[in-house]
Image (cartoon, rainbow, N blue to C red; front, side):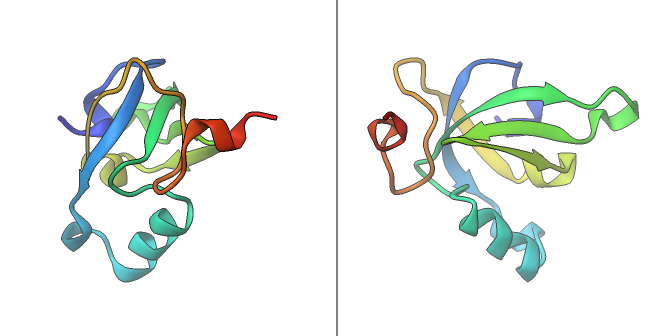
Length: 96
């Protein structure tokens, strides 16, 4: 299921990103933010206008705004026992 279709507040693990539907700059930005396979994130907020853009996502210590088109390219699964963290990191790296 895509990130765009998930409810607010639940921890979600990124299982795949369809990089082919994103332009090169958009894909590079998402990777730089740690949004890639293995990342655990949470939807914090959705826009109030039609299309529900943007979607605010918590990842690590950041809150990132994504367009719905980007969220549709991100496939996720539930990760109820994990804290939010970027791909290649663990949640414990963000706890001080």
